[in-house]
Length: 336
Image (tube, rainbow, N blue to C red; front, top):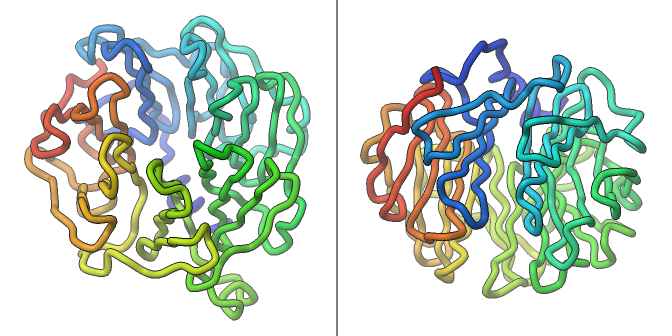
């Protein structure tokens, strides 16, 4: 088990409802309706239709699966995907009211395997990749069938996160227990791109860097950022060479990252010391913790309808909202 996975599973607990003590590990915002929000707490999925005033538990029909990841179909946002611990993928066609299992091709999933992330092809929402503790898998039919795509990944099986070049969706990056891999042919073949990120000695000793997020700059796609449990890294040449940035941050264990889709060079990072923002590509940082009762940030999301509207999930004090791009935060009502 990787350190990243161990940390992920550490927060799993049997909860009867989403309250102030829950870890909000995933936040998904409706692309068109700002009042519709989904959150996952490792155990359950909840949904609000009124901007967070009331919440509904949507996890019926998932047996005893614990929800680790979630995604909305960008073309048909009533279609929701849930990644679980131990039971692969579930899908809902009606906004979470009913769920069906979609694990054809994922039969090697075990009780301890985890689906960490979904990634949609921006040109075809039927084409989806998932990052799992069993590797990378792909579907071209909205989850009806999955195919493992691990050619070239020799050192690792556990994939924590995926990033895609939005202008060139054949180019993907995989954040793993052994650093970062890159493909230029839709995961047909992966190549290790760890220069400056992970030394060969660390790979061989199984003490590899654990990557928690890989994001491609929407303005300059050769710029890629990798947040890890040991700091933030940046490449200017599509992964050929990485450099460490953000050394001034007090805590280097980073759980979440967002690149502002409307402003070049603006990065948001979440970790155990709250949320931080850089407006110059990671050279300098500002702390944005005003209003937070707990600084342990687990998840971040930026609204598709309002670039100044952000949501933040914590491990300890629930969900927060900012209407001014993180300058101030307000707690949202808990789920009873």
